[in-house]
Length: 419
Image (tube, rainbow, N blue to C red; front, top):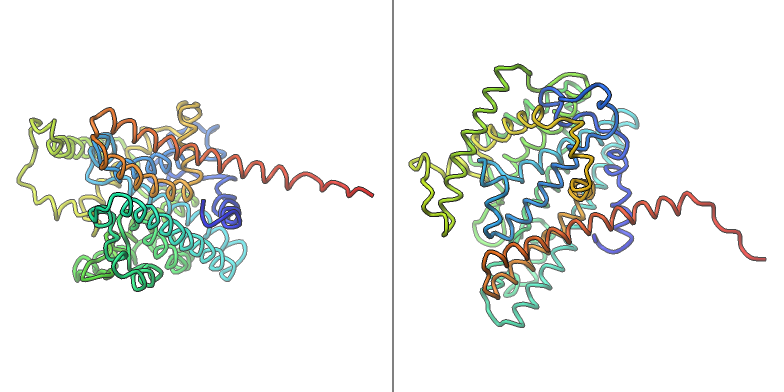
């Protein structure tokens, strides 16, 4: 998927995938208790794969933007799948690269980080080329400039050369192209967090919180091309979620918990999550044309500032931490559903996150064009969304099959040449 078979092979065999394939030491345990019996502590924590895969599905559904969004995280919380994805990415980065730092030294660890940065950067360019081609084709066929405008490519159509140059600098981000550039920047700066983490597990988190507070106080941001637009996911703010994930792994690897566990804390977190869910749900349902009759709770709240996604508002951050903490004990590590056939498709998406995410960007574009071109009653929205999710899961299964086939072939002895 990413830049031809050679790049797919390199990404498929990346350090992240190999390291994750061995052992994951309790993603949710880092937030206070693993919730699993001792026998379940060894081996891969499937919750990590499951929730990352679920986040990718939710991101696709939210990008398509129809009635199905009523069933994603954003309708039941002040945060959404983006926080889940970035947090787990930080957790995995800590797992993979801190281990490399300890075993193989700083030079190798930094080299591995920047190899992954390069893979993400190439993926962003490759998917952009296909995305631009799709939009250009639809624009040529329909002759409607609204397609390019909604896709964020109107400037690209009128000024292609500077747009491409700015895209290579990550300063041109059309619709759907905001998470991957964020991930590139966060991972490129991650070696600093690694070195701080080696000094003390909580030191990178302290620096990250200071940067977050300074960015909110002074309004730090990065400009986009063209005009005075800014990055939708402000790296100065969103780095906190990423670093929080990495520190959560490090604390867990030391046999401790980032958040203390206790009965009253569990009750308080659950009540807070439930309250946020009820308030967010009423706003989400009320905004739907056919559910406008749903009464809105807390209608006078300054919604745009309290739940600001771009700057990762404090309410979003606290809601996400509480939600993850509740999940740490509500979903056991040895939960039976994680081993079910139904969950396997979601697990495979989480295990092949880059490929599936890139596929989701393109599928979101196609789905949006389809729903914009034809009448889309509820059954059509459901059909298009389900088809996109099925293709994403099929992509994950295909990539997994390629990996297994490649490993089995490489393990076989080379056939003898005929004399």
